[in-house]
Image 1 (cartoon, helix red, strand yellow):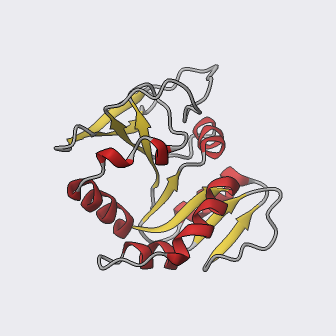
Image 2 (tube, one colour; image 1 turned 90 degrees about the horizontal axis):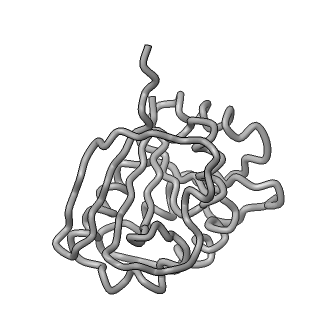
Image 3 (cartoon, helix red, strand yellow; image 1 turned 120 degrees about the horizontal axis):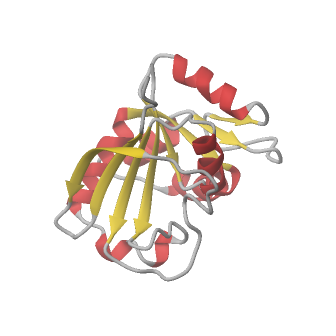
Length: 184
C-alpha cells in the first residue's frame, strides 16, 4: 500500500506561507539531496489548486542535472479543486468530490509515496479525514512572525509519533511524524 506523505518547509513558529521569502538562505547540498531522494521515492503529487497553479507555471521551465525537474514534471499530479476544469501541466488530473475516498483508492494501488507539498487547506482537510500517513516537516531556524500555518486553527487534538529526526548542517531539522495509532 502506498503512503500519502506531507512534505513541508516550516519556520520555527510554524509558518509555511511564502517560503520563497525565508527558505533560500538555508538551502544546502544536503537539503537538495534530501529533497531529490524524497522526490525519487514518490511517484505522484497531490496538490491543492493554488499550489498546483504555482507549480504548473514554474516547473515546466526548469531543468537540472540531477533529474528533479524531470521527475516533478513527469509524475502524475492529482489536483483537489472544485474550480479547476482543464489542468494543462503534464500528467495532471482533478479530484472534485469524494476527496478522501478518491485518495484512499490511490493509496491502494501499487507504487511509491504520494507527496503533498504546500496546499494548507488540503492538508487540513486530509488530516481531519486521517488520510495522511507521514508528516515530514523541514523546520528552518527562522521566526517569520506572520503567515499561514500548515495546520490552521484546530478544534481537535491530533497526536503524532516521532518516526525520525534528520538534522542538516545548515540548522534545518527534518522531523518525520506518523499519526498516533489508536490503542486497542
